[in-house]
Length: 167
Image 1 (cartoon, rainbow, N blue to C red):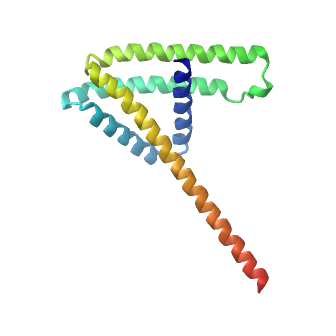
Image 2 (cartoon, rainbow, N blue to C red):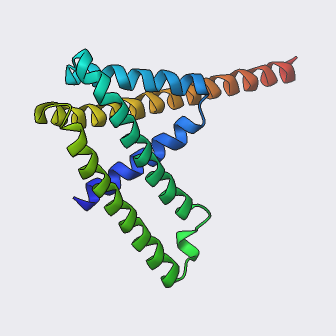
C-alpha cells in the first residue's frame, strides 16, 4: 500500500515536472483530454457533471499542492550528502504529506459520492490511473521521437562533414 502511494506520488511529480515544461496551450489540451476521458468513463449525466467538476477540481488542486510541497522539500537535497537527521526529517515529512493526501482523498471521496455512485467512484480511480499511464506513455514516445530526430540530424551533420573533407 505504501509502495503504491509512493509510486503514485512519484508519477504525479514526474508528470507535473514534464507538464510544467509544456506551454499553457499544451497543459490546456492535456486537461481537456483528462476531463473528456473521466466524463466518458464515468458516464456522467449533465446534472452530475455540473456538481462533480467543481468538487473534483478543488480536490485535484489540493492534491497538487501537497505534491508540490513534497517536491519543494526535496528540492536542492542530495540524498548522498544528507545527514541522518536530514534524511530522517525528509522521510517523516514525506510520510506526513502522504497521510495528509490520504485524509484529503477520504474527505473528497465522501463529497464526491454525494454526487456520483460508488461504481462511478471506482471508475474514477481507474480512469485517473489510465490517464496517467497514457500521458506518461505519450511523453515517453515524444521523447524517443525527439531523440531519434536528434540522432538523424547528427548523422546528417557527420555525413556533411565527411563529404566536405572528401572534396
